[in-house]
Image (tube, rainbow, N blue to C red; front, side):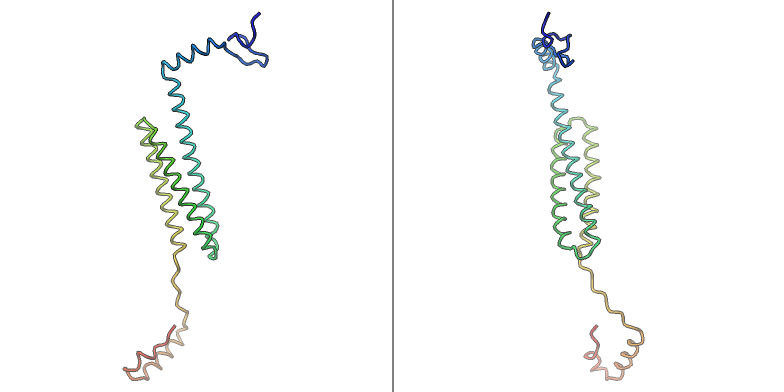
Length: 173
């Protein structure tokens, strides 16, 4: 009787099929000759790069949602500015990982699809960044509400002065 681990048709003690060492060598050389190992490694590398790109995209989205929650309170300007730097860094990492992924693609349809996704993501990034920058932009001071009665009163007073003096009497609001 043969050892269960050496016969390709017999399972080992745990029930797993263990082909013999000779069988492994033959299948490996057949795979190498047909290029399957290179294709498998390339597919795994592409999957890794695509997953990294997706992870970078997720990080960028998380940063934006953190900023969004901070923007609910106008006192969080400093925090929003710090998170904006992290958001931009996440974009840079996404750009780099997407570029690495696209450089490994060989199929024209996959390349077009990847660039289309990139353009969508860039549009989203720019829109979100613009929204944040508009929020960070200093708001102009609103003029104080002056009741119409006070304005009419000041105008009557102003008209009582000679024209040469009127420029120096204008009230400062």
